[in-house]
Length: 169
Image 1 (cartoon, rainbow, N blue to C red):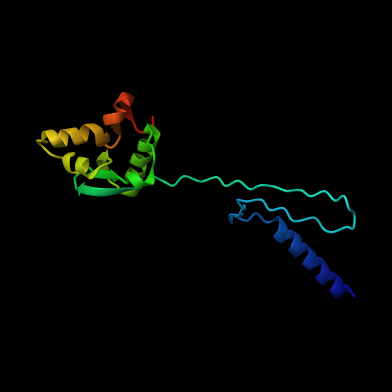
Image 2 (image 1 turned 180 degrees about the horizontal axis):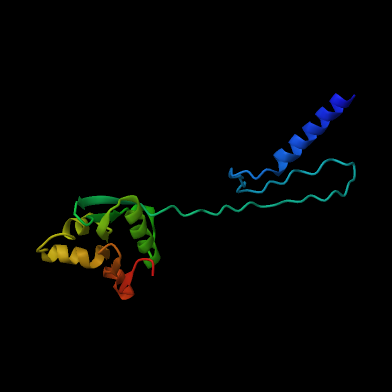
């Protein structure tokens, strides 16, 4: 009788140890975006209360799309021209532009200079040494942000009122 009792105690000790062990694995959970209420069970009572709910769907905004349309390799870092995809947003803020800049720096290192524009015409003109009047007009409206030295941000065009700042400050 001592052996089954010893095995039982060892099993119990093993279960306690497994339950109390500190696991490094992440615990994931899924939350349903809609709430569903089941119909109440028929109880035979005539005055049953029925609870109804309405579901509300909240749209989660997608990220603003962009592409690197030009990249020039450099010894201290590359120069990139970033073209925003206007079909992926309805409005832009200075925070959006800073987020895109940070994303480009992290996703496509090493970046020394970045030029963010929202039309192909501005993308073609942004690195021109002697832009034409037409290119200057495109840049005035569609050249949104310039990153210099990998950290200095200058807002341009419709965002010029935000001035110059340092990334991360």
